[in-house]
Amino acid sequence: NNGSSKGKRDWDINDAIVPQVADLEFDEFSEWSDGHVRLVYSVHNEEAKKHISGWAMRNTNNHNVNILKKSCLGVLVCSQHCTLPNGTKINLRPAICDKARRKQEGKACPNKSCRGGRLEIKPCRGHCGYPVTHFWRHSGNAIFFQAKGVHDHLRPDPKNSSVSKRAFGRVSLTAGKANANLTGSRSNSVPKKSVIAGLVKQVKQQQNLMSKVLKRSTASQPLGHSALEIYQFNACGKCTTYSHCTCSYLEESTRAHQLSQSSNYMSSSWPLAANVSEPANCESSANVFTVNHQHITYNYPIYHATPTAATAAPSKSPSLPYTCISELAYQPANQSNPSSYASNAISNGSCQLAYESSPQLATPEPEFINYSQIKHLELGCKSETTPTIKYNATVETQPVASYAEDNYDYYYQRESNKSDYELQHQQQQQHQQQQHYGNISGGHAHYYESANSYSGVSYFDTGTTAPGSGSVNSGAIGSGSGSGLNPSLEHGSYGSYYDHYANYEQQMAVAANGFAVAGGTAAAAAASAVTAVAPPAPTLTYHHHHHHHLHHSTQHAPPQAAAHAAH
DNA sequence: AGGTGCGGGGAAG
DNA sequence: CTTCCCCGCACCT
Image (cartoon, rainbow, N blue to C red; front, side):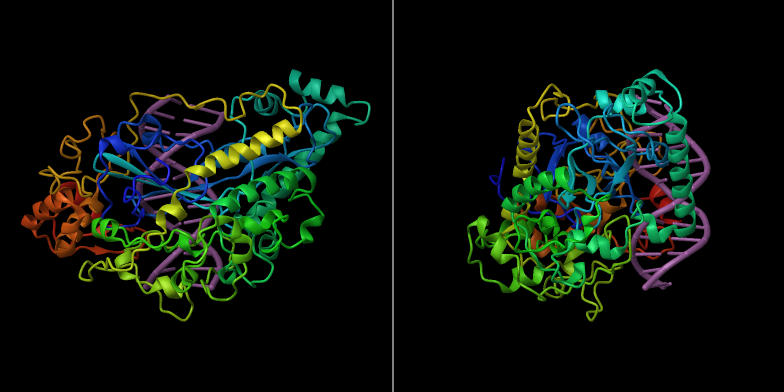
């Protein structure tokens, strides 16, 4: 379904209304989705239900119960960047749990031939210098997935890989068979393991201290890299901030990126590297970090994906790569050839998205935007000057379906990323006389087991544009969990699983009634169904202290919702 | 023990 | 005031 089903992906995770997706059009689960991907899974998709990813994604609290946001933790690499016998690099999956991850850091490199290497996090900065983020949203019979950013690191090995086991399996630094093996093999060069252990301990303590002291300032930079350093690795070298970097991004760029990254990863490699100095340059395709510029589009998708927008979207030439929205807005679609991205990448200053350089783990973008409210942003990015968006936008303002950019499929249809990356990975492996390690190649399907009884669904809309939404109004709450469209979707034990957002959607549908019709019968049905309810316009608010939920001035969605909103 | 998600609360801008 | 992230908790595997 690469690029094919048009309209299918004409949505953004933040849209008030996400399109309904026919059962037949659900995507196959993508464990390694990379790049700007939007996928729609069935609510019956076990992996999707678990929000699984091959990447080490950790939950980041965005105080939006309707959209789960996760950010990439990167990979664990050897501080010495040693090479395994098979020619690959240490590339382990960081533990999701903070505590566990902390324990991982500083551990001895599991590579027997490595001398003194220790594991350290190579943070993901694939999204404008920030970690790649994944968003999950349950709606109707579908689970919407959206990824932002392109991982600037290799795929981590599965947790149960041999290397991983050696690294983390009950092996302490001072004792244990595996460790004994490791240190034994290099004992001739390394004086005493106790020394290593001591060093590691030191490092760990230092890290702890650092994290204590510096806390937020280093939060997103576990290794204590300055914003400048990050910049050097992610910005184009021309722009003073990410905000200003207008390097564009193409599908093809991913490949280039991945490949170059791979090689770079092999040779130089941050964070250890003393050659951190080499600033990425847009023009230089050779430069690993050049491609790291996913920009504004991530945060302010060009699309306003309402059913209408989706269908009514005029088909502009899918020529432009990822660029600042402003560029997209202003540049004529003149290059249908992705390979030209390099040259295209240099446009400067048009985008002024003001991502502050403050280190943050998660992406700086607004968590939940009613894009109907921020149409203008498409031109202004997140400009400092522009008062920007108000996230407490209300339904009063109608979504505008007129500015849909149909470059979407081109931009966001990133199914190819996967193969791109695999390509890269493969190449790397072949490049080094690939031996075994079948488990880290694309070979294995999912190293997560599917559980039938998973009940941890949190992000669920009964809304969408799905028809037969008799339960829409009261639905999404508790038991029924919505119109029987998803019988298997139980709301588990987490009390807060139901969707106000759904209601919001409904109301948006009402508000947008006029144009929603174009969305098709389904949408229309939903819209009209809701119309009957005619709920007061809910306010999408993000400032109710930390409870960024939808607040409905009144409830047509009684108890739970009320309780929830009561926060 | 680790993965996952929720949500409080502090901190920064 | 808004936004972000750390951290602890609860629950699950």
